[in-house]
Length: 144
Ligand SMILES: Nc1ncnc2c1ncn2[C@@H]1O[C@H](COP(=O)(O)OP(=O)(O)OP(=O)(O)O)[C@@H](O)[C@H]1O
Ligand SMILES: [Mg+2]
Image (cartoon, rainbow, N blue to C red; front, side, top):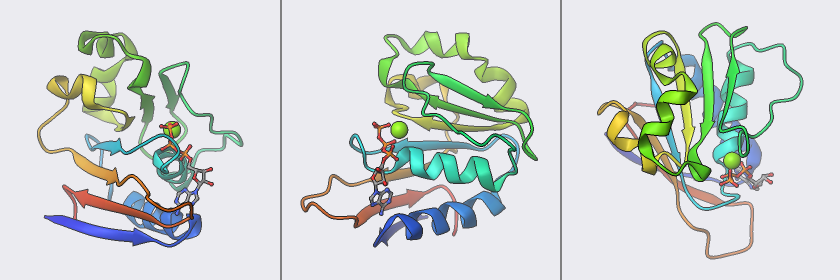
């Protein structure tokens, strides 16, 4: 269940994220991998909007590590673990509540993978060799 996708521009990435959002259920975890500036937050932001938040500004959780949305059809925790020093610190971020009742969107999940479920959805952007808006990604764990 692994698929290669190409997004020719940001709109195509957002359209993919909207289609994905329609399929998400409570308990789903999405691991977002890829280099800095590859589009992980674009995917997360689009999903959060698609699930109905009224928040106008959806900040990157780069410094806060987690931003929670409870006005969406399913509660969402959007995490960025780039600055996490230790896997166990993820428990300070209310992960258990969202694993049971919500959707977890996790940028830079690698450090905490031992605490994430086996059946995650994974979107991995490839490093881009050219300076353009084209993004290649591998998607696994869900059929789109
Ligand atoms: N096809 C595309 N898909 C997504 N983003 C694109 C695309 N083309 C250009 N961009 C631009 O690339 C940038 C992606 O930024 P984003 O914040 O999503 O990266 P990120 O992977 O979350 O990085 P970080 O690791 O720093 O959190 C944005 O500035 C966006 O406008
Ligand atoms: Mg980001």
